[in-house]
Length: 203
Image 1 (tube, rainbow, N blue to C red):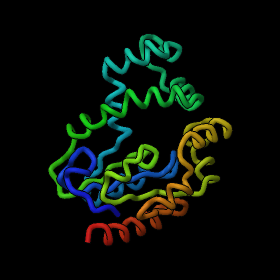
Image 2: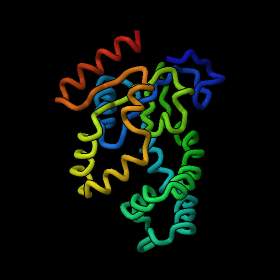
Image 3: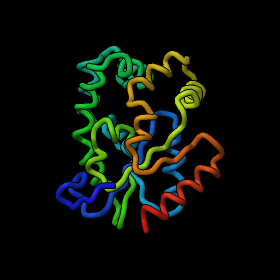
Image 4: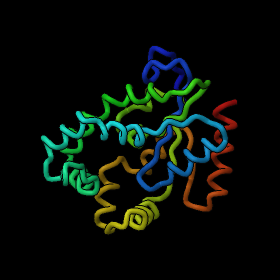
């Protein structure tokens, strides 16, 4: 865990921040929802990104650079995702547009609290782990991850593998995290692990 002050914590926050991450289809939403049910404050980067996509500036950026994913003047997010994960340069260009806007959206929804969990898929990829006080990785083994993604999004195993390969391997994230929650069994097992982490993290 990091010993941070306001000056070197993400967005210069004066409260502790725990970064919550994992891989696509590993179950971060399950963990986030449980934390909220237990009264903890969780901010989800994906939800903030959705808000940024709704902005005229972002729509114009996508339409100018990737007109093939615009249908009836709207972004076709299924096509955009295929494009995004098929090309590293495109991925980087889109992320460079989106991520600088995250701070503004984050601060808009930041509640008055003593601690916040920040659900960020690219926590380690963007080295944001250095700017939070502690990190939690929601883990399942890559085979389960691929199967869940295929079933959840109704896509081919090949497309699922392409999406997973675009992220840091989940086993690597597991090694980097301060806490690991194995989400490969029943929800009850996951919730017990979360409770154990909370006792250590918030003591």
